[in-house]
Length: 153
Image 1: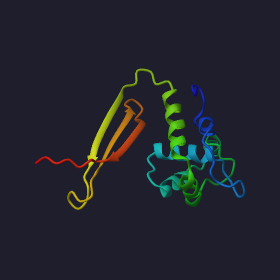
Image 2: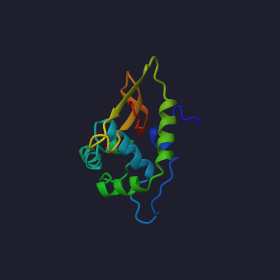
Image 3: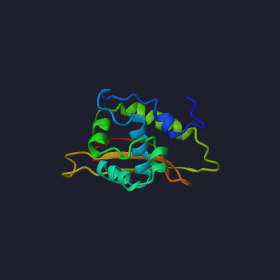
Image 4: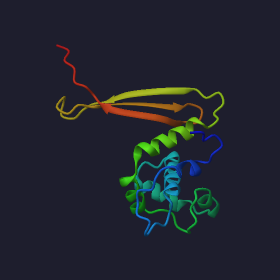
């Protein structure tokens, strides 16, 4: 999958839209590009992503994101798309797009942590590992999994 020189909007067009054709106001690629940009700007919830969009008053910014309307996607629109989205395909396309971008001299850092479980050891925690480009601060990939119980006695 060669995505070098391809815009994020064009790359995300490869992600299938799970919604019905009737009533669509925004293409899935447009919403996904919009959400990725909002998250890169610090948005961490659907409400924050929608608010970020409302704060982008410039027609040029909306056009660059593929938004042809005067308004940006609402929380409900974001929810409906992300609820039914093929997450594996989205992550695959996004990861390949990022991998094909030119980041000269970029160091890749790996960060891992284990989140503790709740109620002592009754509910185990989760391991999280992420790789990111140090110079740009972009997350290149992340993986999580349940912590396996071990006996140290």
